Length: 452
Image (cartoon, rainbow, N blue to C red; front, side, top):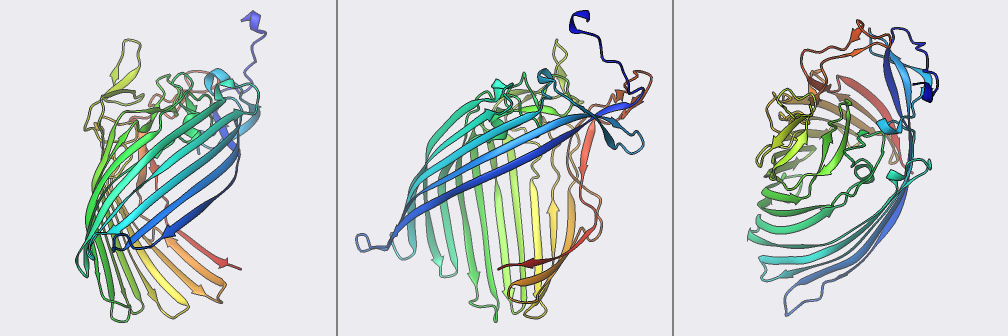
């Protein structure tokens, strides 16, 4: 209006407007250390091993980012900058200049006691204390300034039993805590969503995530050296219940690609892990498989824009009601990796590996109602030659068969957008709200490694 001064004239005609979001700098300096004591004196005539120590890790990160107004080429979707930089604090699009400092301190003690020559018990714990501070360097965004402290003692107890010389059973219980990252803390306000993971705008407090894990399994092996063949294997089951898990939520404010982090009650991850490794002469082969069933365990209402299965509130906000047992999106249930390496000579090695990743729910399809992102498999080749003790040349061919696959998927707005000149010029109208991230096509690399 007149009180705000004259409106800026439209000098872009019918161009389609976009943005060039730049993380101009993310520089981190970190240092730390660990002091540890061990003792293996017998206790009551039994073998006993005590480990105690303290660790301190400190980091200082400088993060800057800007957004430049751009125009989109409708033929190739390239964005060309206009030289105009966006500064709209209310929309979460202001230049960011943030300093994050974090210090993680841990004190730990474990004791392994051999009850018999076959049965051993381990018990102990670790106390963690974290200090995470965010400081806005622009002087204009007080919402980013904060001082956060997290602390917790995590116990662990477990045991191993040697059934035979080549077969061991194990079981245990442990707890762990994960503090929110500076990124999560800097983007946790539903009223000020962020363009993840570029722009940080506000930092209401988040709770730390606390996990409780029970695991059990078997491991074993045969053979003593590679000349006759050495086989090692393991299979185990795990169940991890996490309190106050942190998830990313799409913003309900209607701005595509914006969101924020929040605590989402309890989540459960349970499954099995299996591994196999075999070495014989010049051959080394391995295979690993993991099954994870990841589910929400708390009822929670989440905004879900562009989700074709979402409900709509009286205010026009799209949302879903997550119920216990709904699967967490973006986590494939099945992962399999196998590979083989062959030493042609002492200096020359060749190998191949196969990666198979199962299907997964689209990110933000928290009620599991849309079709999944399909499973995929990729074969890679690699070789290396040790010229001298310190110099090695190597080559890689990723995705040898040029498989077309998707890494993940999410929902996207279908209505497209108008040009700067307004209707009837439209672009990016879609018939399907699902958008997929394509995997890397066939790619070949060669290089040299040197160490001194």
